Length: 402
Ligand SMILES: *Cc1c(COP(=O)(O)O)cnc(C)c1O
Image 1 (spheres, rainbow, N blue to C red):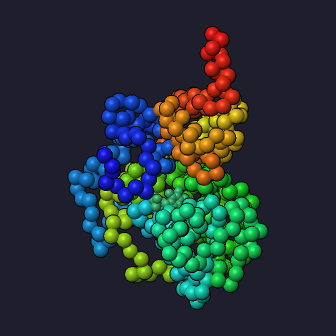
Image 2: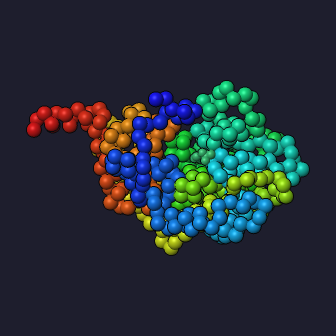
Image 3: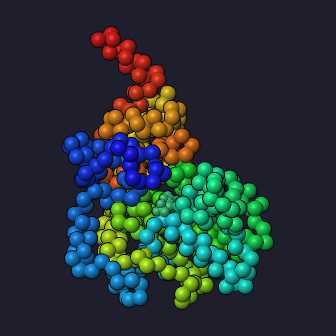
């Protein structure tokens, strides 16, 4: 039977009924090791007792009141986020794209509040992904996502990722901000170099522009830091977060300095659902775990184990793996075989990885993944590699010999 869903996704013939930790289970009991984490969303894995309890307790009390009222759990979560970061204030959204929409609006409003409403342009980068709304597809600049949707929202000037000189050359009288993922996710786990990211900060300072980081994928512990900007030793003026921040409950956030947010006064922005009590209960529960003493250091340690294990895998399967890149538990394998085929081979070995641009598969396990699960994942990825090319031929030959 055909699906009643709008057919925008080529879905796998696979459905899950429940999850536990880093594992997903089908209705017939098949068990998959999830190294995709629902695209970097399931930060605490599945059925995490603390997160489940927080959601259930809040579900018994109150789901939604609207932002006409005080939401104490939201005050708490915002306070915790500002205390842990560069930011002075937070706005909660339901998704990454909405967080990016506000990021763009805030940067424009700041320039306008400075008496320069014409400086609404932003420099963005090739390979970027910022969401699927009209403004965020213009910011991302992927022609596939723009085609047929009418005039491209103006105000985004795109240059190659990593090219500081090109970014500088693109600055014109209308440029008021730079928007960048310090580590590109959908673009293929491309890690911005320290010179590049720090150079962008310097450009913004020199030209009185706002630096905006899209950390929807790289944030909330993914890299072993609460946010990836900490790896670079420079802070943005505005930061968009989502994905892992709700642990699977739809939640996004825009963090900003008071200065960057100074144009966003009463009535300048809003959302019906954003920051509702259910989302705030989940956001606080995620932070309880991620900010617990030692947790992020241990993510960094396990990230290193993952990275080293992947290096071993790549050395063994040079015919399949061309390059490893990433930080912490955000790793990518650039492949010599089609990434969709590799992801299918991985699924056949009962491990989930996620295709990205540049013929990469992303490896984004839940932040609670254990050392043993990392080793088991590497074993399964090795088995997936053996579905291809020379290694497969060798294995067949060995099989025939013995
Ligand atoms: C996923 C993602 C978005 C969009 O988030 P949605 O919740 O799908 O709207 C934006 N930026 C980055 C870097 C992302 O990875």
